[in-house]
Image (cartoon, rainbow, N blue to C red; front, side):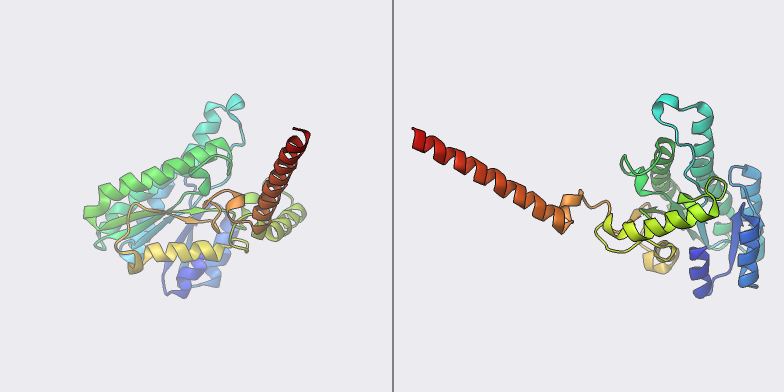
Length: 273
């Protein structure tokens, strides 16, 4: 939604595909004439193709594709992972991206090229930032972005990815799993704690993602393809002691205490000797 709003501000016409029909219809009504909505379950290949074909028919082609649909998916650890859990997550987070690109290609060629932006994640770069199946899928999106960029470069189609960090969106409070009151509490807690979890002292917002997507969508990134951009407040730059002044001070204090203890022991040994 944040990206749609930013693109509308920039004068784009947008076709939104989602399974949240109420929110999609409201968005289309809010930006009547610039935004249209079509129901699209991205785990269904035929619905992806229909979405791309409608965009091509509405706009005379497709200039920009943002493959952004997703959810946290199966929480299983390796010991209790199932084939069904793997398949559902990969279908939603990887297969949908690949097929989105595939069915957008003819419509982008009709415009002489285009830009594809895929949502990966910081979870696709190292362990600890998401469930196993989700993280594996997001790593696949990063590599899919590279190989698709190479494959489509001479067609004038650029393919890049963004890797969000902690962004305050509904992915952390899905409506089917979290009651509204609890969701509000979780979001408030996240908003308060987020500035202390990464070097940049602010919570990540949808507008931050929208700005990165806009960069990849425009000629400002005309010489960039196959890249993935970390939009994570610096979370990936290093361990906490590399950027948190309090931790650095604590580390220095501990080193000084060890030195003082060592020197005191050395002095005592010298006296007793």
